[in-house]
Length: 347
Image 1: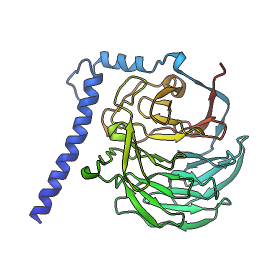
Image 2: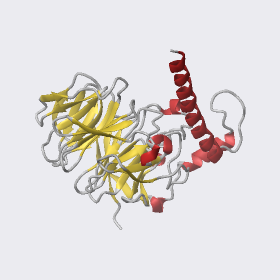
Image 3: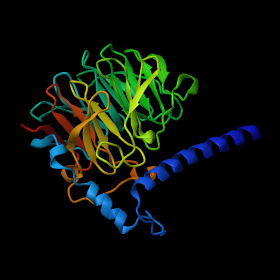
Image 4: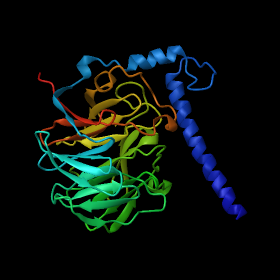
């Protein structure tokens, strides 16, 4: 028992050091002066600098908001997905609401708990919903067809992605792992457990934001939010490469843990959402920055600028995003509980 307690103390110390080190890095990049008072501890100069970060060169903004916002009529929204027909699926309250391409409600699926994440299979139309510590599967009509077992006692399911081959990848923020399942919900293997012999760095997940997508090459892209980057793995769990860096510059990711959500365009370009300083951007599949979808001035006009240096400052509030077959980007505004559409600007 004494030995176990010692191990627990070491693990706690290591976790504390990681979070503290992250905070030191961000502070060193951002803070010009510290007041020494309780609270944020940031000076007026720092606040001014953060405010400047909300202003993005218009030449970098490649998209513009178009059409009428879609009212979800939900009190609390959390996730958005798009199916092969370009229908929109929004998770909120204890329901999944489906909208057609005109924005009309096609159906509402009642579920037993709060859905934190969604995916819709392009091949089968099955709806995969992350509810607490497990996945539930619904058919296109909203009928429950399966409840998958929880992947672990500490599981918090925050993202689901379905590959072209039919495998289902589930991101578990509590376990800091991605689980690969077959279409029937049988676990195949786990991806991302720290293994220095295999050059797997391990995921750092300070808050319940942990996302995965699977592009056409079949290799899952997983956000490592505490490391402020996106990592690529084979389906067997071999680490391939990563991109992204901590930076307040528009090309990088800032704060304690970003991006919070990602999605794919039809050409496999990656859309990223950051919380705190709300920014939605596009990178190519190798991580090369291409431009901005929307920044704080477009997403949260009039709101005070904010960078979350510590995880507890931004446990919630990140926008979610999805793209349709034509490359239109749909942003789930979780503050206003509406869907906003962004299209490429005309040259």
